[in-house]
Length: 75
Image (cartoon, rainbow, N blue to C red):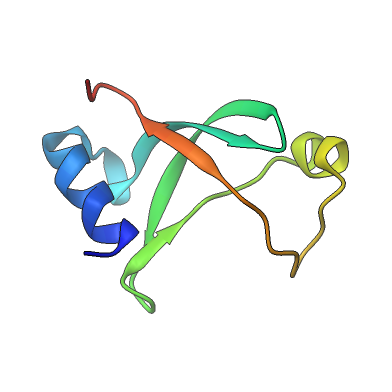
């Protein structure tokens, strides 16, 4: 099972408008609240990363990064 399938299973009825799913995300120790958005082209999800987080984590477009996230409302 891939990560997108795990997210869909975990989120269940928590999905909001446009299929977005509220999450807490973390990259390089920097945590923020956002949503995952479904990507119909890939069948996966997109994670928007705030400029402040990109700058603090010293990442830019095309970088490979480790991301941790927790779906809100899932125990």
